[in-house]
Amino acid sequence: MDDSFDPYFLLLAVAWLTLQAVSLLGLRGRWRLAAWVPLIVMGAAFATAVLGGLAGSNLAPIWVILALPVCLLWLLALWLLRAAAWTLDRYRP
Image (cartoon, rainbow, N blue to C red; front, side, top):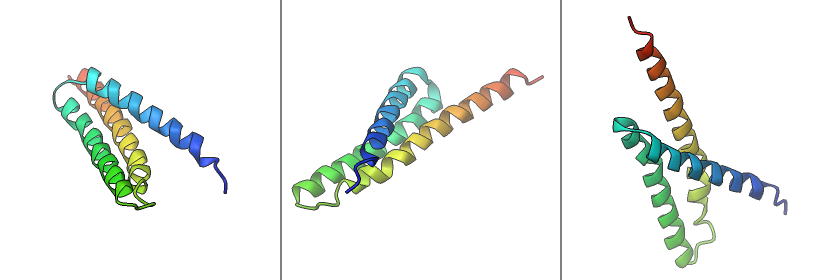
């Protein structure tokens, strides 16, 4: 079995946690509201994984593995859209 996936998954998890914290602390208004979405999704995925694991499912953590890249991409897209909106607003006549 090849365990080369583990360090990359942990790197993604650290990147998501860092970006999530920066987003919730640094964004304001509706941007912050949009930053709560990945946290809620990951919370639901984690709760599903824990409950599934307690029920004896060995595939329960798959929800966290599938949700993590989506949530990270959501936050990256949120910051890119915010930067684009800020740039367009700054150069508006």
